[in-house]
Image 1 (spheres, rainbow, N blue to C red):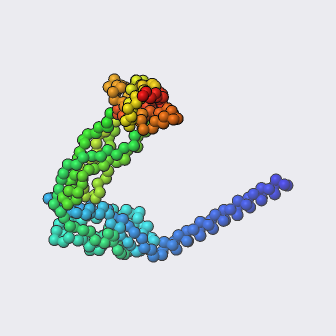
Image 2 (cartoon, rainbow, N blue to C red):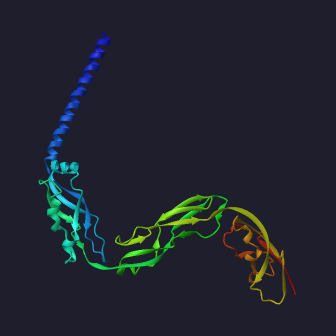
Length: 318
């Protein structure tokens, strides 16, 4: 008997859930029908295509790539238009506007209406106007600036300058704008953990304004990264800012410079490329404190430089 009662209780619970689910579905459908029967204002994006562009001149302001159209219709019609994907693009023949400097886009409303259901009302169009002012086409060659943030793997470093080809490009566009351009930047590069000579294709930043073009629009950059190796050399310590007649003797007179250099530069670096000094104006004859050695000259492509010792003692001979 307890088992029979439990089964009846479970069956009743399932029936109640089924009734609730059906009621929920019916309510949702009724709500959807009611909502879709209401009037709505929405926006539709239509791509813009242009034909018969001028051959010898260019527009000072870029032509818009798309139009944003405000439309009013019932939810049914808006949803139907969306699923039909009818409003894809509109073609603008620029020959029709040769004698004007401004295109008022509301004049295209009839063209937009052809893309949509007759039950949809066309409202405002954005942009409201398109500038058709033209300028002579200009071109010039400008250098490329390679923008990079590059790090090397531990125990690796740069063994030369980053080179890229081409190092300049041709910029073409409205002559009044082209003449103001003095360089073109690459897209920002974030490259981490390099451990060898590497080559990257890098795009140039998108032109601004968009009616400029670059030829070519990318470069090939070679980044010279090599393994580091350590070396120790002896460098004489020079005295500056010491004008007294007394003789100053340093102990020691030379300092060991320990550094790392990339393997391709290792044999080109010698002691003459380093300059170590102490500042004679810091001498305190009463305290006789050791003097700090400063390395004021060092060759490029040296890393992790250390001095041994860091200080020198001195003797003043009268």
